[in-house]
Length: 153
Image: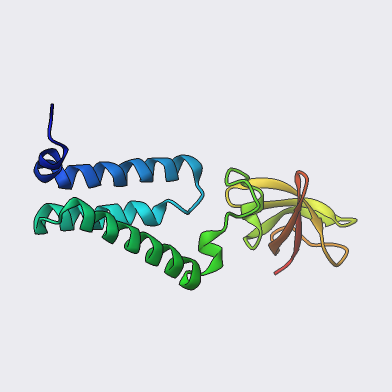
C-alpha cells in the first residue's frame, strides 16, 4: 500500500499545481470570479511546498489563510467593474459602437439617414436636429434595434 506522506513529500509541488490548475479550470468554466483567488493561493503554496519543503499540514493552513486573505482583499480593493460582468453580450457589436465617431454617407432627411462607422454603413436616427449633410461627423449615442442613434460631433 502506498504511503500518502511519502507521495506528498516526493510530489508536493505537482499536487498543489494540479489543485491550482483544477480550480482555475472550474473558474474559467463558471466565470464566477470566486475561484481565481484559491487557484492563485494554490500556486503560491506549490512554490513554498516544492522549494521550501513545506509539510502537508502547514501547506493546507497557509493555503486556507492565503485564500481567505486574497478573496477578502480582492473584494474590498479591486474596482467593482473588474469583478462584475457587464449586462451586455460580448458578441453584440452594435452596443460597442456607442461613443464611436463616423461620417454621414447620405444627407439626413426627417431625422433618418445613413452613416459610416467602424468600417460599416448603418441606418441612423438623429437624437437632435432635423438634418445633416453628407460628410459631416457624427457620434453614436445609442442603439435602437438595427438603427444607431447619432448626434452631430
